[in-house]
Image (cartoon, rainbow, N blue to C red; front, side):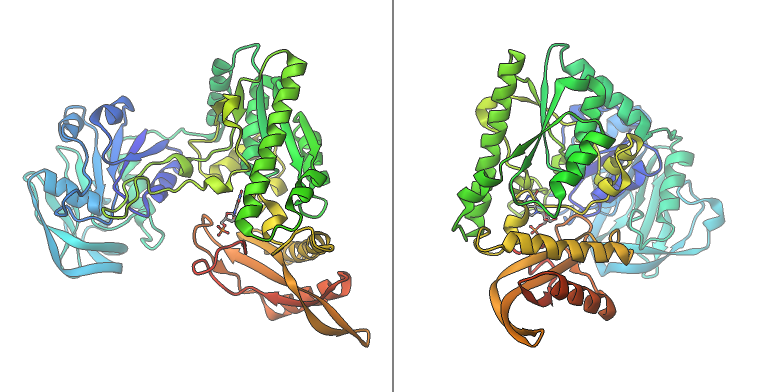
Length: 525
Ligand code: XMP
């Protein structure tokens, strides 16, 4: 295990992912965790992340007392990155000061001395790196050497090989540091002697074992499938472990996309052999949503209805099985469980606000179900890999995210008004199919259509029309937290617009949303 102590850098997750991409298991922990928590994990290497702090700011985060002694007496190599380097220098008795010149962005560093950090061929050479710091190390603790300096003469890399302490002032984990990945690889394999061998096949085997050890032979498990990647992969693993003691429910709330129910159910049944009950709750949802225009009220109503349905599902099962289901499967991912070090004064205790309103409904508190979260140590791309080795169809694994409240947040205003949902389904299908045909589906994070509750005048077949306007939204993003709108070729937009107006009755105008997030959000409601 390579353990990353997080001090609040926006790149901490990236370090974890980069290391995992080398087939080395890596976890990330709040940098101020207790010594016991750190040592219990028995890491073979510890990386101290960057962060937005200065070591001189009161309350700036630091590793616990006794950490250095523990690392030394157990010969555990420690690599400080950016703030991590400064922390190491500061805590070991060196001096860190506000730099003469702050270094942000692309910089050149010069490797001055032979060291374990850079293969010897690199000595005397320059390399491009990504810097982002205001403070700099000016006096190193005893036993440390400067390995590389920036063009401005600031310390860029340090080491104390006999103590196995290393530091990089720049960020090797970002792609803007072209040789960064090679440096990490060399450090972990050649300097620290870490062995590669963490594979998704092992993760799957381990997860199945854990589920079998957890769920008793008579116990039953339920899972709400949304049709998304996470819940599907989570359910598939649990099904592999306990077979038909897993009971899944898929709810058609009338807010799904074109033929979505049929398509998703077919995948569950034919490709994944998952035992899924499909609940037709179209009338139930749409009746409750009738006349509702406030987006937050819509979301609340939908969440509440989901809970009622899950509750009824659990009660039905209890009648059938003679006992209550004991566990609930959730597709929680690693980014949602990592706690990290927020900047002082940010008012946040955890840097990752869990998108609670993004979960499909949640479940009644009095169900008292224990959770099974087989994906909680994995990132999204790893979940996709896991799905792949379990033969979840590729097309399914690559589906764009779809919000729990479905098309209700894409029909602005009253979703039951006229045939808004039907129009939206058709427009969305044409748009998505065109994106797929143009080979763009995988480069776009999310694309969809939005139904606007206004009409505009048009002329179709020599006749005046007074019909609906639809907006097309396509964004690129890494995690949905920020996003940029996607630049389509004019020809593509022209074709899509024509297809929509020709094929969908009731639409005479198509517009494109050209706003990033922020200031907009991805969904319109
Ligand atoms: P926003 O609109 O907040 O969306 O920029 C960011 C990402 O989250 C999705 N989203 C949701 N997903 N339930 C979900 O499961 C929700 O209530 C919800 N709201 C937004 C959205 O589609 C985008 O991918």
